[in-house]
Structure formats: structure tokens, C-alpha cells
Image: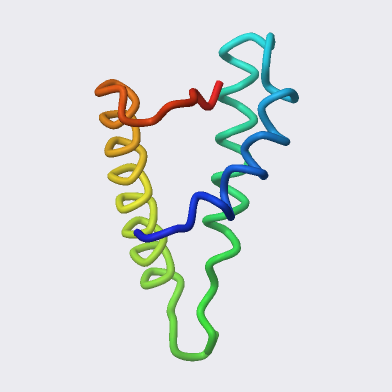
Length: 87
């Protein structure tokens, strides 16, 4: 996934204060809610051609790729290659 940090950083910076100081369970629930909204938003462009089963498979693949991306980011943070922490 290629994303320009200049597009991402301002959004992350605006969200950080909303999560800062909250219990980990609250942070997790907020992130889970946003992820569910994101996954739900991935609908077929042609609803007649994508069955419910195929939609679930499509979303599973998106979720799998997203988790891979998160893991790669964590590795960068752990290696000190990302200068600022998200939370």
C-alpha cells in the first residue's frame, strides 16, 4: 500500500487527542468501530454481480491486507524508523 504521509499525518494528529489518556479498551473499541465502518463501506460497484458470500470474502481479503499493513508499521515503529508515535 502506497500512501503519502502528508495525507495521513494531519488526520492522525487530529485523532490522537481524542484517544490520548483513554483506557486501552476504549481506544481499541474506537479503532474497531472505525475499522468496521471502513470494511462495511467496501461494497461492490455492481451489487448484482457480487453475492453476499463474495462480499464477505472480499472484506476478509481487505482485512487481511490491512492487518499486514499494520504489522509492517509496527515493525517500523519498533525499529525506530518512524519518528513519531501514533498514540
